[in-house]
Amino acid sequence: MKSRTKAILVDILGFTLIIAAAPIGWVPGPGGIAVLILGLSLLATNHEWAERIMNRVKQEVLSANKKVAED
Image (tube, rainbow, N blue to C red):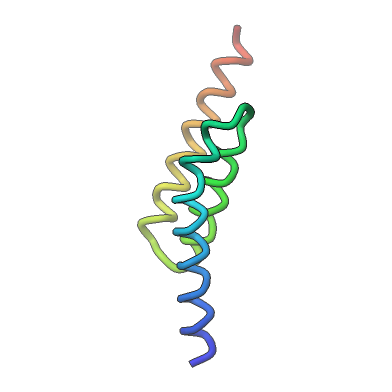
């Protein structure tokens, strides 16, 4: 029971952070991106679909980093 409660609380926090990322994204700086990634990483602990999204985000960041380093 304790494990199930913890999973539900992690899901609630993860979804809350993802929702909060939208208004934070309008503030100057990369704050919204960091909050979104934090929310996804929390959800990835319980859900495969979130883990797949996180892996895709990691690939895109590495690709963008490589392109910037080449220029």
